[in-house]
Length: 339
Image (cartoon, rainbow, N blue to C red; front, top):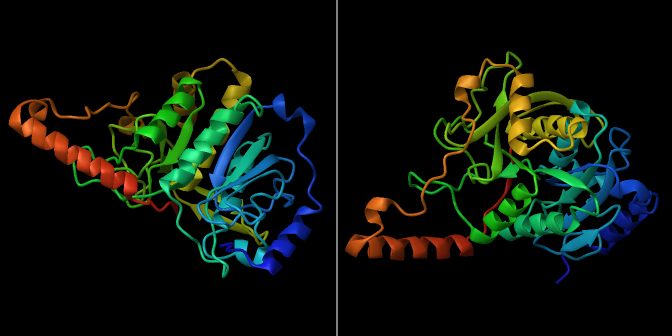
């Protein structure tokens, strides 16, 4: 059943009618993918920065009435919807990225659906898989250099290896990482000093925490020294969907600042690796927090060596298999990661 009302579809079609077509030179420029709530790409703040839009959602909530759409206007929501229920978040994130690096060229992917009344609907793990798969298939067409997703969740496991794992998601992430396309993810804003949000906790995501204006680690920023990759400023004046300047705060902002700076480094040094660019980011951001940084993530074994054999090992393997099945069935709800 189509969840979009006819008036909303008409309003969207009218709004799309004045959008420009994708530039022919898109293949030659380096692009950053930002996946978030929604965007009005005609806003003057970033109208020249956004070169393409995509909609990938669980519900029939794209402007064309399906769960997928590609082309100008695909990530659009009318003003009466984009300014409420958290859908403003995407505008603020793009503004943060562009104000950090005005030369950015952005592909915006809408991954958060809405109900007919404009309420935010949940997004599953499948949406992020489809998003990464789209990036994988289109990385050459658009010369995609990085992905910044200021969404995550804190539905973590009550184990020392607390990070939820999904083999197909990890495989897509690993594939992009080996192609030197990093995925910037927020650590979360709960002030947790031992765990970070998913997917920042996964081994091939770049976990980005937040700094205060004094260049100290923000009190709200989640930290896990074994997986944290980098910290960036977490408070920034940005534009919201109503065209007002507001103060945005959170590791969401840090993700966009880090990704925008990374794109500038990549522009100047096209052959630089992810590890090398991270080191350059750290040097540029100062040293007051470097004691919190681990240069490489620690890979935790999938099965503890003490439980890998014998009767207890078989029991553990069975329990692990059950947990894995439950995780695959669970629809993990993404949330905005900013205050």
